[in-house]
Length: 241
Image (cartoon, rainbow, N blue to C red; front, side, top):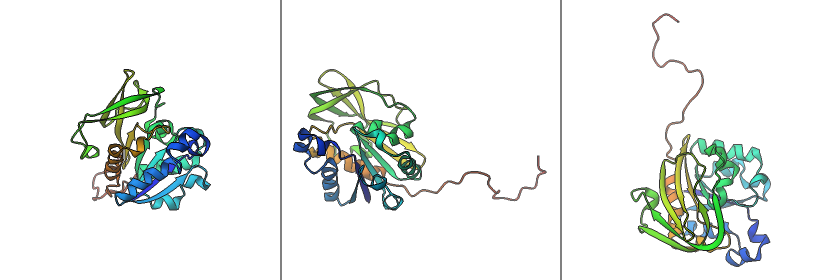
């Protein structure tokens, strides 16, 4: 399984508070536990040519994990188009935390992906509401994060195929924090936890969710659809028209 982890890598270089939590970048923590699970991992960063997402890299990617927050608009439209095309063709896509506002995710959803938010370091309780889903394999009935950024409903996304997790925050809001979609041949998972100032990605349950999601989102290698004018498979004997 070949996984590419994409990261803006801005907060970790600019903000001391974030550096204290992710000194070598959020992508390195994500890649570290994915490698321990046996996945082949490469990194792609906003600052690289073509944001690290060249045709060659995408040709060698089964699942793309995306973490973005501060520079959604800096992602070139040509790269957005390239990534979207690959997802529709079967590449898995996992959008983490504020990546709900990434150009790629909004393009796939067709909505604003707006929500409520509050950064107050409050407790988040994530309930597993579809326990039979493969992403939930090996998880407890619920798990808690002592500090997270609050994301609250309404969440302006299309109706998900599955709401895997439903979160409650200490301030009272709830949120659909784990949602799945299919676009074309590609499987998509949105997972809300992961604010840059909190050590969320060191949490073993969060790590298990992401590893499960990678396995779930992997390409199915189903038939390649064809479009446009199509020759008949059988002889047509009737008169035209």
